[in-house]
Image (cartoon, rainbow, N blue to C red):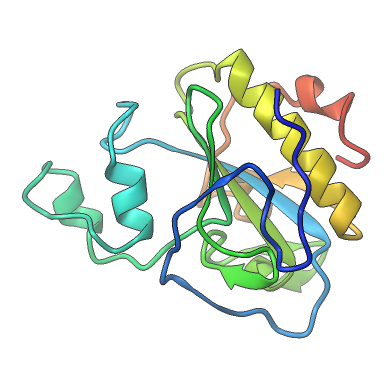
Length: 182
């Protein structure tokens, strides 16, 4: 298992960097929240390039019927953990990735302003791989060491009724023993 660290430029050591154009300057707010998501493209299919293409605006509408609905979305996350545990970073933690959408946490709107978004390749309908949890635990420790994190939440916690991820198969117990905050 890799031991990650977040450097002064907001990048995780040992992560593969694939730059997304879908970010902007973070308002002058500290990073205090981690949001965990799940994603698979096409839905419930793993191992393809769909997620990377979505986050880099290269998704083609004719590659899959589902893509025709989403190919023009401008979205990103700071990190993606693939099924094999590989870590990809799209946006510096110092910048605002576009992962949370309309959201609220403890009365604060616009969670993208003060959060780091982590996507797990998966869906609401299947368990995540042990190696994904290993990478996630190490990444959470690195983020906790770099920023004054107050909580780790699911997308469903900050956008209830609109989002369901990371889903019922996400094992919060598995990360709670390793994370300083949940």
